[in-house]
Length: 101
Image: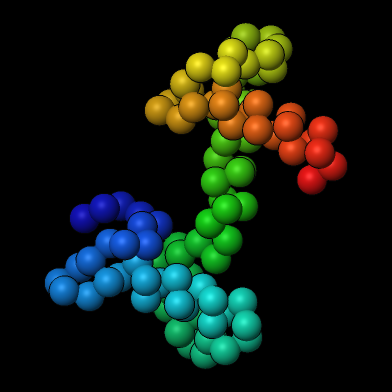
C-alpha cells in the first residue's frame, strides 16, 4: 500500500505501533540480538537498518542532481529539490564540517 517500509516511529497499524516495533528490530540488530531469519525477512521488505545514513545519501543524490543541472553546488538555503529542503541540509553539512563533525 505504501510502497516502502520506512515506517515512522509513531505509526500505528491495526492497533499495533508498527513504527516502535520496527525501531526495536533495528535496535536488536544493532546489538546482535536479532535472529538471522527475522533479519532476512525484514531485508526482503527493504527495511533500512540505518535510517539516518539513508536520509543522508538521499540528500546527497539530490545535491548531485542539482550540481549536474546547475553546474555548481552553491544551493540557496531555501532551495527545495524534489520536495526536500536541499539548501538547509547543505548548510547543516557545512556547519558540521566547521565544527569538525
